[in-house]
Length: 168
Ligand SMILES: [Zn+2]
Image 1 (cartoon, helix red, strand yellow):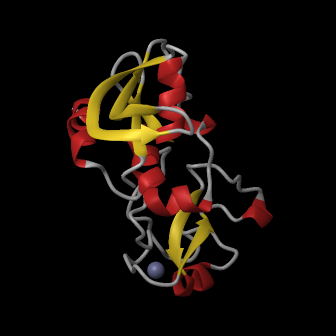
Image 2 (image 1 turned 30 degrees about the vertical axis):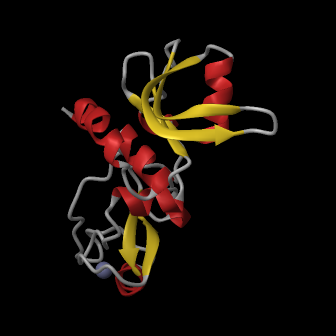
């Protein structure tokens, strides 16, 4: 992950993660400035550029809120900390539609949860209440930072204070 660069919004809010090459291009086009340098160089065919760890966009990007963040199996599992939302198991995870699709349930953040295969099978085509099962959490759209962390798997040391700032 050493070639990944954290991208901050103009407000210093973490937005996402990009490649070193993309970060250099944004800086050369003056669309972004370096906030923290890595101390390493990025080499292109003709040139070498000091490589940042963190860049900040020179313009404000409006971040979609709530439902407009793309739902995916991977994102639902990350939001739910890779735990079954019925029994807490961390193995054989699947995605459960709380209101089954066959009964009109949507594929949105509020209706999709991580569920282990046994719980999913036990619930079947029923609502949790009908199956006498309870969700441990109220499914919601995840925090924007979940996407930053998901993109890289872990948080680079020099990124931490920007992320702490955004969470605070
Ligand atoms: Zn389970």
